[in-house]
Length: 278
Image (cartoon, rainbow, N blue to C red; front, side, top):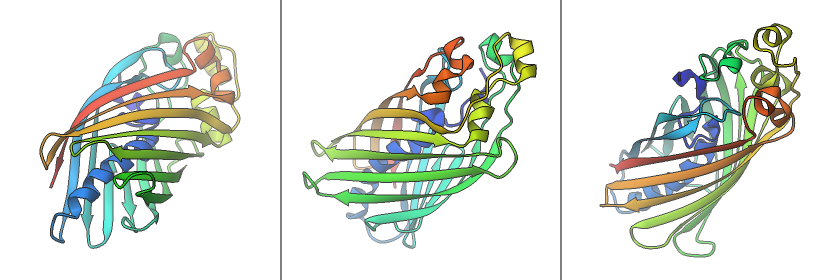
């Protein structure tokens, strides 16, 4: 199994990590915001390191262990988030309406464990840029809760897919005790024709090599996901976080022979990590 098969490193929706970016981020930010109120102004943040399991590629029925890493740094009124190969800069981290630029590297698909899919055209990694926007509401149903509505759009700038992809989602986080926070999130991902055909299409040459039928995938909704997470604060600075996620491929992604013949539209992932706040 090659780490290039994973566009995100877990919680990744999607391996899409992008999903992990939309779902795990708010939960971690809650921890960080609570800690900030007790600390003097300056530079502070959080680092999370862990591991989990995720499909070998989108649509795969074979799973593999993968590492993941997350870091956030607040200073001078902005927040920098690093989630695996993706970096985002929140220009308004304390406001209800937040936004900022995002840049990342999509790891592509190559050297997968499925022998049939591995005969298809390799997908090179691609540099992507884009942005995100979100609405964040606190204290809606409880003093310690947070609701977040978010959207993100990323476009390839290096010729890997010549396409774009995005996600929209919602997450809810609440502290059930001084040490424990739990959360749930839902999201849907969409992509352009070029992106979808790159990952779910089968070219004539690929069909001849693999035995799969030729297939052209069109853009639109790609999947829907639901995730759950829990965080336990061992001390003021150290914590343990776990997350599970289920995604269902839809439309042309689900109808691709890569999925129908060699994989599954049902995708699962889970991970656990240790966090440190400073």
